[in-house]
Length: 208
Image (cartoon, rainbow, N blue to C red; front, side, top):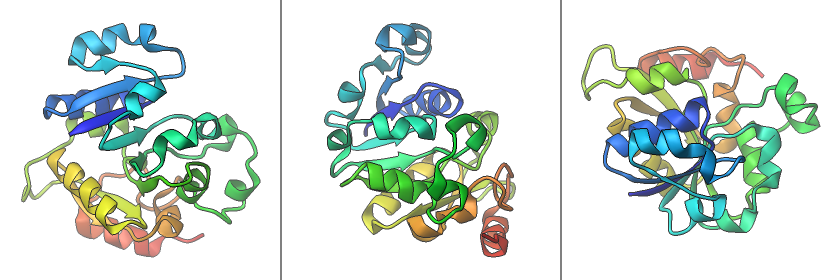
């Protein structure tokens, strides 16, 4: 699959490594320009590009950048694309965004509102990057970690759930984008390595 990754930090860099190792054609972009990605490209055999190049012809695009930077993305580039939202809102980093501070919107709904036309799916936001890099296990393994996957588009969600499984994690349907607050920071599943039943339990126990 042709995949674009926007962001080369902990999560974006980790997914660049993991997805390219699985044989996907990955183009990675960041805010500093392709010339700053030489080491990651040399390590992974991926392609460095601009945001435009990373999204062009991509079957799936991962957004893993500070949320405050999301409104600066050209929304038209993501129209019709399956977009994996791996972001979290951290007020100390992203500033006071009223709809997110009072949780009247999930962070993924806020992102989807900015990327009009994108088929947004929330995943990879609750797992620590080192565990995402090294924690994948074969299907059926008793200690396989599960990841919640939320989205409104059933076809897009299914594609992303299959990708999660290929990375070595059990995908758990976490409902719609509006329900994805259940996997945001401060909830039982955030920053934890639960199995599928544990993730379902944690999602059910989450409180606004």
